[in-house]
Length: 383
Image (tube, rainbow, N blue to C red):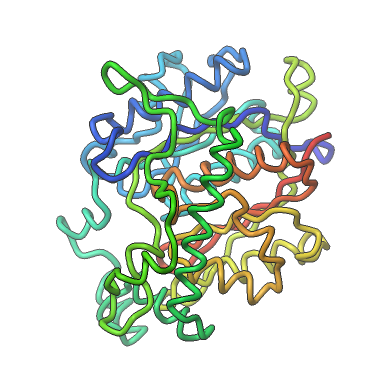
């Protein structure tokens, strides 16, 4: 067992649809089925050989209730014998799904696993759980001396702690759109995106991109969380719809079935951090991961740090001493959106394709997550 590894042989995603946009009428189960079917088409793997499907989804209510991963498998037309589980680690749900699937492969429990996730925020809005109950509980509020746990307020606190001006955040947000536009124009997303049929046409591009975004244009937007704040809709992630999936196996199994691995999952970490500040978890998660594998930030050629809010990747960049050029090199959630349960797998898909396109040995991704947790995952390009 000690010689086993875990490699990704294929990774695909839907285009990311904007809120109430082109994907709003697609049920999340059916959206998930799109990427599952595409994995089978591209790899030639008989789905009956998939040991498990691990599927991230955050708001598991309404259209996304009742183990959405299992019904995605059935909607994809896969055999009844293929199981699935739905995972919730807040925004890192599908990143956790990937790591959990890799753990099972490494342990020898699975030979072939599929991991990914979905979120259709147009149909199941952010905060829908609060309409039917009281998340978190009063004891948690009492422990931390607060009457709410709010990610937007956390973003404002991060901006203040690291002395980030609104201009700095708006420049970063504009950079996200600029980098996404450049990647789209050179075809950087073409191989990873699976078009989604929407009536008589299909959506094949990320819908949230706003070309020509500048700090000057963003300056007119009102702060979202504090009257004198620096965080607003233009330097925060967009509410979106989307799905993504990856196939994981050992490199030995890949050779047996005639597939060439893209990356090897080197290691992962998960941490808990301040639940009030909430969004700083990627910093200790990354440091824990780098310490575990004996690398430094200078060894990382590309890093996907989810752009939940502009202060998150900026604080990570400052604290880790990372070269700004490696951070979110093809843009991120500010420019294209953050379909919660799908975002971890979307980041993986973007990252490993960018690594392959640019011969980058090590790529790292990390997600801040509600409640103050964070995942970090390190990938190595398989040459």
